[in-house]
Image 1 (cartoon, protein in one colour):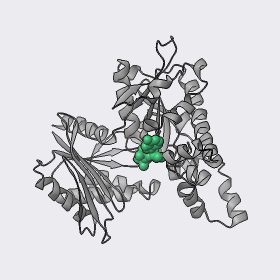
Image 2: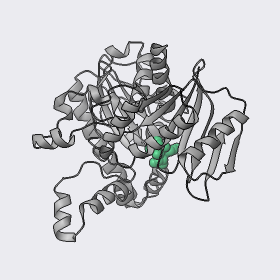
Image 3: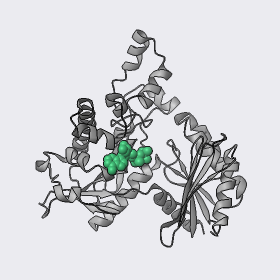
Image 4: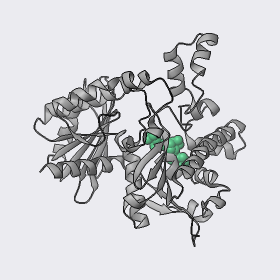
Amino acid sequence: MYILVVNSGSSSIKFQLLDMATERPLASGLLEAIGSPAAVLHLRSTTDTSIQVSASDHSQALGFIFKALDAMGFDRPQAIGHRVVHGGERFQAPVLLTPEVISQIKAISSLAPLHNPANLLGIAACQQHFPGLPQVAVFDTAFHQTMPETAWRYAVPDSWYLDYGVRRYGFHGSSHAFVCRAAARWLGKPLQHCNLISLHLGNGASITAVEQGRSVDTSMGMTPLEGLVMGSRAGDIDPAIHAYLGRTAGLGVNEVERQLNQASGLKALCGDNDMRRILARAAAGDKAASLALDIYVRRIRKYLGAYMLLLGRVDAMVFTGGIGENAAEVRAHICRGLDAFGIRLDVELNQSPWQGQAAIHQLPQAKNDLALLVIATNEELEIARQVAELIGSHL
Ligand code: ADP
């Protein structure tokens, strides 16, 4: 079975065609700058190519993508999986796209005004090109719908939740789900028997507590702004800062929100949001970069401590995302001095090259030691697997 995974943004479409027999990508790519004369399609298959295209909208852009896949001789996919950022409370699992489901995704777009409308553009364009082909929405929030009310409820007036959906949803679901499945396989236990802490550390970052295979808490909230310090997002701050800046600096709420999302985090602390550069600067004695790194790691450790207490017993801690997978030094900072809690990093293994997944804890393990795993995330494959499971169950 071939499955096409589509991740549609407001001016770009990322895609991957997967052969589910091998779970390998046959082709992948990115069409960017849709609607501008600079639109370009980057294709990766046996070779890499970039082609200037004229794509005034998502439908034309997908037309080019389908034509390029055709020209490479690939069969038509049997199904398309769409990444949809916000599924609200309505969607707890992947779902076949019907007109009713599309209206429901539209209805919750106010929860993710930048993302859901862009995801819907990709869905509409695929339906136009391939009417009749099964198309499935896979939601970033769905994995966290297993959280108990004690985790998802904010202590705010009832009407905020009942009338406006103000609650914690969590994100990065496909990534956390993928690495948790892989960690369970590594541990040699069914996922339902595993307690895990999964750290997705990329430009966006979140940490999730997984109890018996189900998400029971996660650091992102109603939006992806809550929680860890990120590339350009502040993560947790005192919510009264909005009002304070309104009164004292005359900043409107939209401007405060913009700055918290785009001009905060590592970028605000040291002017850089690329962890490679931050590590190099810190190593060269740059104080701002060192401070940024320390604040970044401290926030992660606060959540880590909270989730270890919440879970009681933890089988494994999993690092993923661009930083989690590649920044050995950040992993070492996070684990420093935690031997008493069963977190014993092997310095050499942590630095060693690896592929796909690696264990980086000290051996032999003591009774309560956690497995420390680095697992390369693969959100496209997770989406394709969920689509295949759903389509399989409908055949
Ligand atoms: P996104 O959330 O945009 O998908 P990624 O998961 O690709 O982000 O992560 C991007 C982050 O990973 C950047 O901060 C980048 O500097 C960091 N990163 C990538 N490779 C390395 C590396 N070798 N060492 C340290 N950091 C890295």
